[in-house]
Image (cartoon, rainbow, N blue to C red; front, side):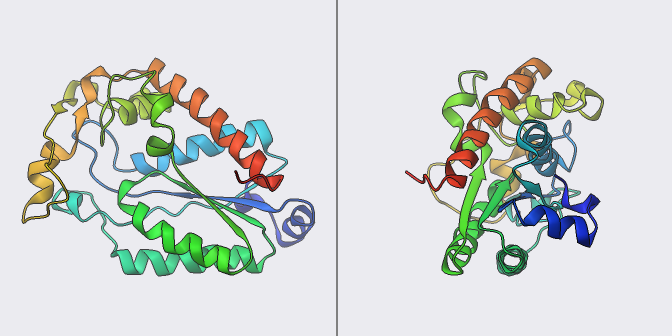
Length: 238
């Protein structure tokens, strides 16, 4: 059930029986020359569509959070970078707003790597306020499933590009898809980090992406997400 289409009375009625909210979280940033700037929120929204279709009567889907932290990609056009501090505080306030509205389970469905570090303290704040936080970083948490479908992963790479193609092929320009196999040797940060490590604003091999691979990713990963949500709703955390 999508919250943004509800009025106050409908929301009150639904939340009397539904204790789980999903907050899609993403980013607006460069994704190579071939993928849209909104890739990191388009994909979580697609997962939400599937969740709505499968268990829409058991969850409420909140409006998405479109902006996040992206220091490395901020050197490229179209990246709207928010500081980690500002992002953490904002998303924490949003999440605690749902706690105040009586939700027991807060699902943070994230599509952007730069947000990951901030989601830990946000989750801890949710738990400290007697609710349960669940974080899904889909490309990390379900890497094993994804690598049965694609040869590799990357920012605007094979897996992510495939996921966008499965949403709408017309928003991906595969004639501009390239490959970047540069690997950093560790947690090393330096000036022009993004231009060097994420050459052309991507990593991995986008040329190997396909709509069919994206469809398989959604099928496999959404199944696992729904299974975990179901377990959490039953109080099964381990």
